Length: 249
Image 1 (tube, helix red, strand yellow):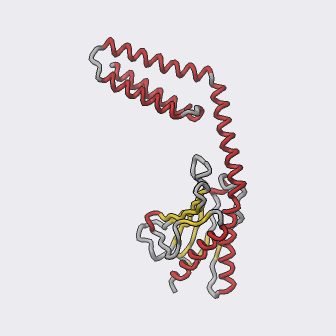
Image 2 (cartoon, one colour):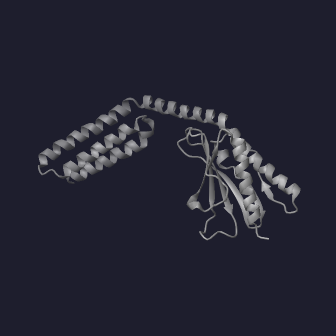
Image 3 (cartoon, one colour):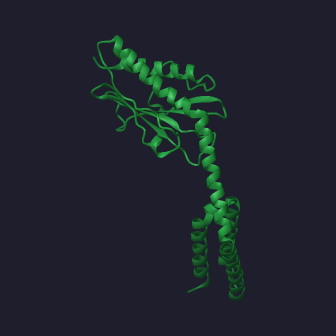
């Protein structure tokens, strides 16, 4: 086995170790820098002509790999504690964010239900709906499995889900995704989706449709999050009216 092959195997081994244990090391940027440094050294070794020089550099790399492994093994409990602290901090963040922003999601789906029921009371045509009580936490599995549905006609159905983005922080609250499954604009083969995203940092509610496949006249791209009740009413009324007017007779 030549030296370049040996170096390659060693680098793969290091990469595997860092991938496995990387989440327990807080400064991931240092890991990246280290890997980049090793990769650069490998490239330099490929250009070496003197076998003795290559052997020396391989030995230096072995020493560096061993140093990392020994340090990790010696401080394994410390790394585990560090990971536990990071996990606890993330959970604390979700609790705080949920306490502050869950009310917006509750208001969205309660308002949706109220609009549907009001329409049913005042129209001969009825909208069938299934909107359950909103989960206790917007970040947990129950929220991911929360899927209300509204059926305007046999082949015109709205489905909702929450898109939870990892890692969680105050700028990435779960987005409400509206999936419009209809029978008239389905040339793409998959139903279009409208994302209703919340940005506390910018204090806005953003609306985004992939490839602009949901185009609703009068629907703004962003609304005021501070006045979320008024903003949500405007969004829902515009969407429901647009859908009802497009129904096939």
